[in-house]
Image (cartoon, rainbow, N blue to C red; front, side):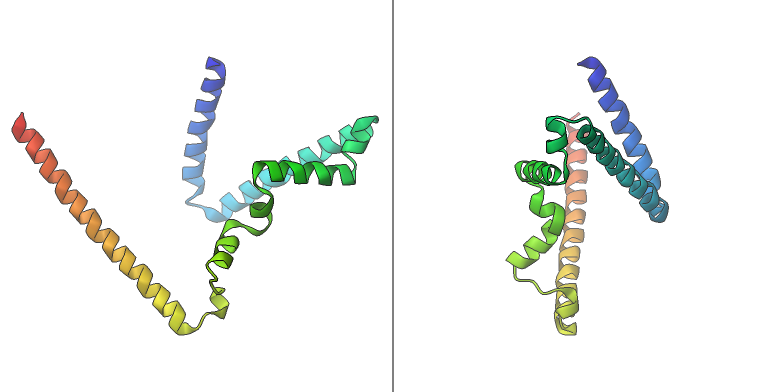
Length: 145
């Protein structure tokens, strides 16, 4: 178990470093990430082909139709079936009956922008208030010593 934790910790730290570096270069990040995704799915595809060609039940399970059924079952069990194909934001916009940005009028977009700016202003005010409170707490702790 200690080895697994060490491996997990190592890859967690490497991921943080790589993601931090690549996030400053989104174009390069896109190509590297895209290549990783394609190679992963290529490996899955070839593994399934290998299992299918091994004969027996594997040839049925990993046939075209078997792969579809297994894939749908896995996606349904993990709760990824709908979100994988249409995304959470589309579902939420449908539930809230939001319009697509292209269907909104200029006035609606401006109203939304104003609302976002108000929330941003409130957030900035709250940040200032928190900083003041932190200073007061630090001062009172320092005086108590």
